[in-house]
Every structure is written in C-alpha cells, then in structure tokens.
Length: 117
Length: 111
Image 1 (cartoon, each protein chain N blue to C red):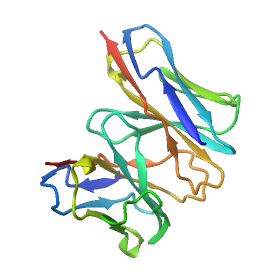
Image 2 (tube, rainbow over the protein chains, first blue to last red):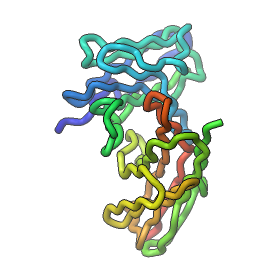
Image 3 (spheres, each protein chain N blue to C red):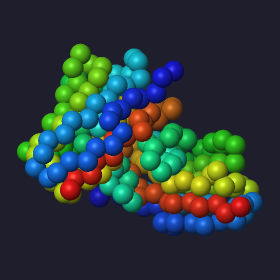
C-alpha cells in the first residue's frame, strides 16, 4: 500500500511569513495526526482528526497554527505568521481508526523540514 | 504526571555487540506501548506494539519486552544498518489515542 505522502520536503521562510504543509494519508485511514518534531526531541502532537472532525488540538498554537481536513482525506497545516521557534520537522501520520487496537501503530510520512530565518 | 523516559540518550556499539535500550513509563491505565525506529530525515517507522506485562515481540535482531514499569528493546548482534534513533511511546486510557513520547535513544553501530 502507498504510504503517507507529505509535501514539500523542505521549506525555508523568513519569520512572519506564512507557510502551508500538505498531507495525504493512507487510503481508508480515518485518523490523521500532525506532529511537530524539534531536533533531538520526540514528536509532539499538534492536532488529531477523526475523519474530518478534530479530536484533539490542545497543543496547537491556535493564534498562528491552523489545520483542516477536507472530506476526511487530505489535510493541510498552516502557520501564519511563522516564528523562529517554529523551525522543526512537521510529521503527518495516519491510522486505521483511533478506536481500533492499533496493532501496527501509526504510519508516518517523511515529514516537512521547516527552517524559519 | 504521565511520563516516558528513555535511556541511554545515546549508545555506541561495535557490530555484533548485543545491548538493550530502556523505556520507563509512569502512566495510569496503559493501553499500549510502541517502539519506533527513526532514520535521519525520515518519519518514525513502526516496530512493535506491546499491550500487557510479560508480552514479548521479535523482529529480526530486535526483541521488545514489557513489564509494568518499563520496556526493553534488546538488540542482538547488531549491524551498522541498525543505526538509528529508537523512540518509545505510550498510549493510555482516556487520552484519545494521543501518544506520550520519549526523547529517543540514538544508536550507532560501528563496523
């Protein structure tokens, strides 16, 4: 099966600019996650979707970050305006159904490396 | 407070030198513990899920075990291609499947 697709792979922007990331999960996966991973740290959940509804966005900095998942498939994550501390890898992951016992765990994409200068 | 701690932070082994990575956790209501492998520039790759104390799972040179307080990832006769960061994450009851992640162990295997 095709994996989780993310684009772009790399992005360099100046602070206060805006940026958007795109994710296409594995076909049929109802649950989609956006994670932020700062170098040397574990992934931090930003937002979790179940189909096109938000399950958890408690750690999403809502003053600058937004995310949507139209039609319960693709998702975009936007940062506006970006700060230097937003430099990180943004990972998208999907799983079959968060209510299911995830015998195989999440499947992650390769991520987007964002550098804010 | 829920916490996942991995040790050591970094480990350097010679090829063939077996060792173990540790993941200790303090959560109420463990639903599952996950091990992932992450190579530079890539997203984490799923390795194992363990659900209950005493459970063991194996994959090639890797074996994961689980107790009520910690999990071990045993690496038997490692090869250079096993070099990666190994991440542990915990899923607990009532957390909407939001995983609690450790910081990882960076493993380097020298030929």
